[in-house]
Length: 307
Image (cartoon, rainbow, N blue to C red; front, side):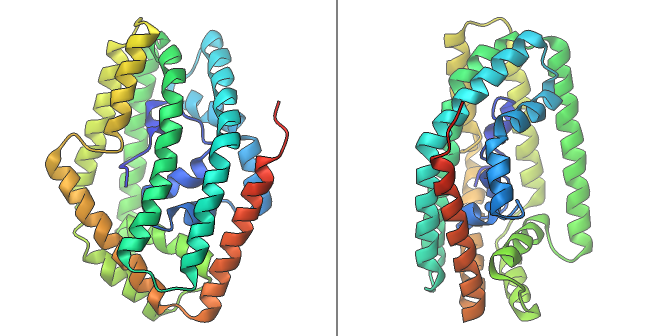
């Protein structure tokens, strides 16, 4: 799974944040689980239709756009949003259909990882679509805006470290805690035994927080360095640089970390499969209904008129 999404390049909106937040933590059921970060279908609709405004304010909090930049960013976000509604919502809905077919089965880790790969491809498609837009904006960033971005990264890192500490105080790592929160929204209440099965499997996946933190900061530094070099660059140069930077967020430049990541991902998929095998008919029915509701909501969003 990507360490963190291309949103850290400060060019993407939250229009697929309903997916991408969970991509940090979860394989396989990431799409469905991410959707549960919004309270219900009505909230999903409001969040998606407001994605441009929400995305702009989120991005602005990272770099503090000037007036000219603000106009350009909003225009680019509107373009990406229209593309996403037309091209990506149908693909997202089909992923939910695939997830539904697995609910009443007992898929192994490999099948769940295959579904996760489909989710990851949607995240990559959005990032790729955003690169040309980013190339028109990033070269105009001023030194003080890059300093603001640096501070935003530092604040985010401190917050994340606090979240990790809180999770450890509850006897698990943050990935496990976040996953369980989303899984309980999908399945309904999990028993103590089911939770313990999942926690035990997750604890065996070899995840190394120190490696994760080092990789995170390395990628942040790559962003800051690239943005600094692109000041005043032409769009073609910026697009080529950002295209390469985009790849970094989905495949580490460090071969050892890539190997570590793949091993952790495979074992995490097996942890999800182990939990699913322990669920009962009522829990699977609860998940099936949730997934179907989200699919219906996405299909409804496809046909809403845009500006």
